[in-house]
Image (cartoon, rainbow, N blue to C red; front, side):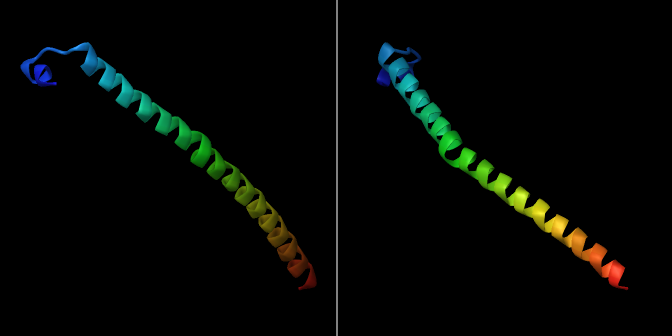
Amino acid sequence: MMDFLKGTVTPKDWAATAGILSVTAGVVVAFFFMVHQGQRKEVGLIKADDQQVFADLTEARRINNEIE
């Protein structure tokens, strides 16, 4: 490792760099599949509920206008 400070890069240094990059890539992929995908499903459900509520509100306004 002291060779690294002198300007030479050894295969051991490259292996450490590859290991760090592999772990980082693994964390990013795990986040995407575990957290991001789950949140996308929840957002889809919330949007569907929102559309239903909006349709109900529109119907209620139409009925209210007919009463008056």
